[in-house]
Amino acid sequence: MLKIELLESFIAVAECGNLSKAAEKVCRTPSALSLQIKKLEESVGQPLLLRDNRGVVLTESGNTLLNYAYKMMQLNTQALDELKDCQNREVIRLGVPTDYITYYLDNCLLEFVREFTCIELVIDTDVSGNLYKRLHQGEFDLIVATHWQPPVQGELLFERRFHWVAAKNGSAHKRETIPMALYPENCPIRAQVFANHQLSMRPINVLLSTPSPQALCMAVENDLSIAPIAEFRINDKMQILDPIEHDLPPLPVFNESLYLNPESQTEACNQLIALLKANLKNRNTTVE
Image (cartoon, rainbow, N blue to C red; front, side, top):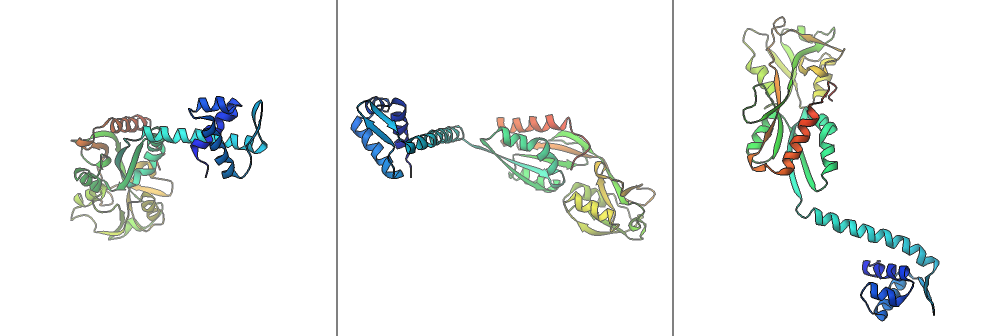
């Protein structure tokens, strides 16, 4: 193992070309410095210096080691600097709706991780109802969550419009008991489907419950069910269903909002919020 203090002494000797001058530079006696060089030569198993009356010169092995010694000293300094900078490392616990995690990662979260290397960002995904509950239980510092009402304690980011969708030229939406693919329990979108379902409407048969919007879309495209799909995800394999015409529960406009734990109002949290808001102002309609 190459010890840092031995490499430091070796670099001093190589740069000064003289043991006495190098000893002064590293605040050691010439004999102590000579002993360190001997230990280093024993570690590598090769002579590193050639000594004569004019001073010392590096052997071929010495020149090779010198290049590595500079790199190792640089890495040592960088490691100490980073550990010093991150001694009070902060953790931000963020909750994000499962169906929007890719969008937030692509548009701002990875940028935050890249920029703030001394902050650990812990991201968890869940349906919005669970995220909101867990925030109040102290599990998160900040969440992004969906609701059908304007946020009371949160800050509105943008609106999300959903439509009932079936397979283009499909038959699932024509069945007497209508097959549905929905988000899981505690999702506000699912909650509104059942809250707005009237006895006069066709009965519902939930065939698939999943937090994955891709799975919902595939169920629709394969004519297995209908589903409430975000407007930007609707493609040419689908058709939009009119709720009145097909006796379906109406879907309100949903709000995507930020909610902050009152005990987590740190500068780092504020920076993350600012980044989320700045990037979402320019969001486009190609969210994945």
